[in-house]
Image (cartoon, rainbow over all chains, first blue to last red; front, side, top):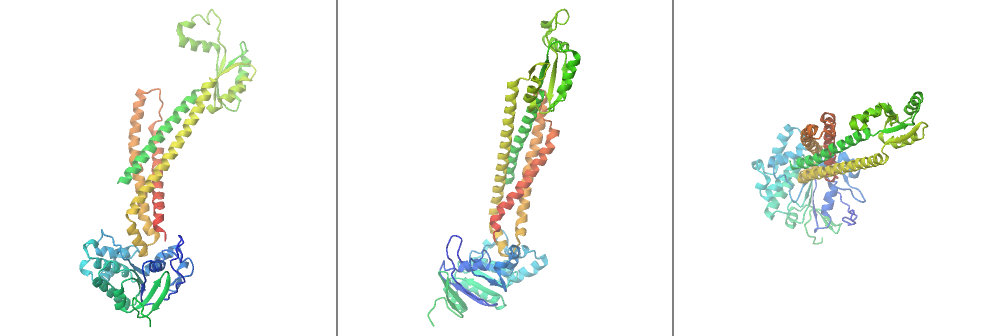
Length: 221
Length: 270
């Protein structure tokens, strides 16, 4: 993947992620994690090679089909990106409103999502009244409320303390156990080491390690 | 609210300029239509030949109207203007004036060409239309018209730019929301239509306010001018305000709609 400004962000990356997997992408800043995430969200297309999601080459999606692709993906951001002037409930409901869900569906699904992340009690608070970890849970609830096939989390614990981070990861794991694929970019060593899931390590745009049940750092076999 | 103000002020200036331009146009037309050619007939031309001349003149392509003024009628007009100074002419003393034709052309700008044609007709002694004055008047009004059009185009562009920028600000303020909408899979039109409606509302309300103010001010100006500036023939409000409103509302709505579509484009890039 070469950016228009000539920066080569990814080089001959070949990754296959199966349905229901939990995958950590690790690597220092600039290794290419964010580029992979943006490619998966189809923010842009690869300059060469192809990406297949849910059995289709995503370059083949027509412009108006892209929103449909995104409805099968839930994205969690490091900086939460919540609407600060709306309540927790409304933030989660927003994801359903904009895809035209019925109000009956919204009334059913939003409480489910909030319960899943443990925020039922906080539904009527504004995001800025919550702690960082709670805000990230709101973001998580918004990502899962549409019942996506894939959750993409871009350093979701980057702004959180270790204990809160583990709580977020636990929630992600329980979502994963229910069958949703999770891809998470991180440089949170503690989290990765504790979870022992598949780890894809990137360096300078190349995959240097792809290991099941791996740890953050590689100690050889 | 501030955006509506910006649009209203810009369209107010544009509207004022349109009114000014229409009136300048109207005024120059009035002046131009008063310009006519006077063709003097050779002395002692028999009446039947004079009539033949009249027919020949009316058959010229660009001529709209020909009026014969006999020398007696010309003397009468002179007497009305000058009174005693022309005392005695016509009764005892010989009338020194000539028969003449007053000719109007269909388009005022054709006057010099028609005058030249008349000059070459046998039986016509002299042609007068105030050549220098008329020609420079036409050049002047022509330049004035183009300056007016250039100004209006400039103002319309300024209005478009201001409105697009204003909408860009409101879009910018909600960039975060738009971003989230994109990520959770909202369709482009779902994201776009509230902004397009906002743009249309902004444009049409922004046009309605100056339209109302201008209608009122212009009606006041015209009724004031009717008594105080009798020589200045302004276009009556009933004749132009309807058209003005349509133009302003159209400009406002179209610019508002286009402005929001253009400002949205950057944010909708997939």
